[in-house]
Length: 216
Figure 1 (cartoon, rainbow, N blue to C red):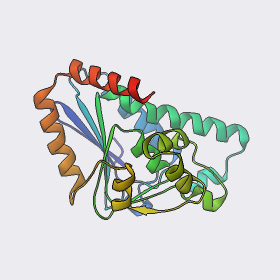
Figure 2: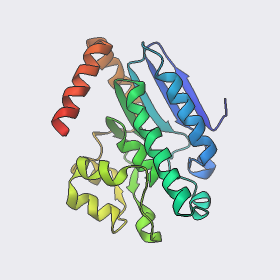
Figure 3: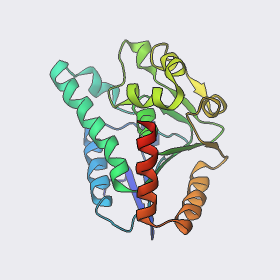
Figure 4: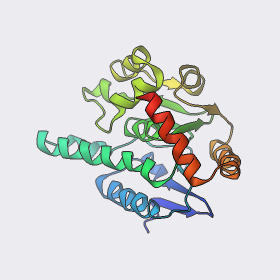
């Protein structure tokens, strides 16, 4: 397996670590394909109760590779967007509980990735932004739908249209993250231990379905 995406599997949970810190853990197309394969394989594990997505080197992810985006035409841009949307949606098919453990920059498609998870735990150093607005582009991986549902239309408009960057405290205040912890991954692991000690996979799936029905 590529060292750019690390998979650590445990008894009832898995950790997927984006491991390109020198590139701010951005994901070119080849790595998106690899990520899709990893998530697909995890979804076949009936014993998996939780999936944690995190980033190495003090960065969560800055999303897509901008050099690849610059080369897209309308047809390939549509294909690129749908592919990213499908991969991020598959996170929730892999496990009943999905968590983004965020340190450092969580930008663009990286923010789309985080909002595709059920929960987001962040360090005090985490920052959040959709910078595409400053470049005349808009995120294509589902962030325009997920972000308003999480933080409301007005706050989402500020991030999506103005390209505002916010810190962890502001993200907590508006509901973008669920908890701030000095070590977000460690907190996520503790949370998983608490949850999996109380609920079976079937119970967690039922809870998730009820929450999604209410959200819709």
